[in-house]
Amino acid sequence: MGKLISSPSACIEADPDLIAKVVLMPGDPLRAQKVAETYLEDPVCFNTVRNMLGFTGTYKGRRISVMGSGMGVPSATLYVHELFSFYGVETVLRIGSAGGIGADVKLRDLVVAMTASTNSNYCIQYQFPGQLSPQADYGLLRRAVELAEDRGISVKVGSVFTADMFYNQNEKAAGQYRDMGLLAVEMETAGIYWEAMASHKRALSLLTISDHIFTGEGLSAQDRQDSFTEMMEVALDTAWEAAE
Image 1 (cartoon, one colour):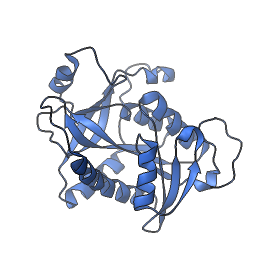
Image 2 (cartoon, helix red, strand yellow; image 1 turned 45 degrees about the horizontal axis):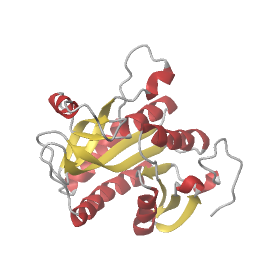
Image 3 (tube, rainbow, N blue to C red; image 1 turned 120 degrees about the horizontal axis):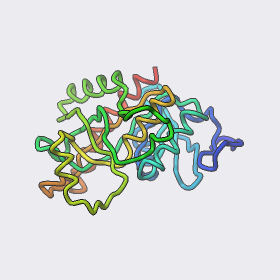
Image 4 (cartoon, one colour; image 1 turned 180 degrees about the vertical axis):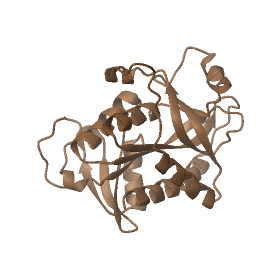
């Protein structure tokens, strides 16, 4: 690990030179470690504060970092904001799982989030005179979809719902999301997109459907691993091009 430096926050304390311009972000820091050890050459750990592990290595000769985001908008945006604002990161790609909502969304599908509806109040800080729609970077989105289709991966593009709560007492909510054409529900995308927009940076959320809210289906441990591998191939090659 590189030398520790004075940081504006207690949450990331790293040598800026150790963090690449492009960062992959799963929610789980142990998954970040797994990604680094599996897919990156010569990974180096750049952050251990609060056990939110971050690593940088090379993929096909280009530097890419991977770091956990934690769960929910407050945690994810904390790390994304600091990466954008204090460490010179230009692109963040969320890599995670989601619960399927759409009727045509199946287990193992890759959902590429074009935008994210949400019940988060995160964007109130911007004092935007209206409702600010959180949206992906189109260039990243277009390329990720092309890469997925080239691999024969079942990919869906559209809107998702970023929830502030994992357990929702409103039993009608999922049906209302579905009625409005949303594809899946998760907990981080809207915040990451808002943060990228406010920072004039780029972000994209790639989500593997691990269970379906209406059918009750869920992936086995092996199917989760296989689907994650498919998503990672798309994410890594998208990141590789963004790192050029």
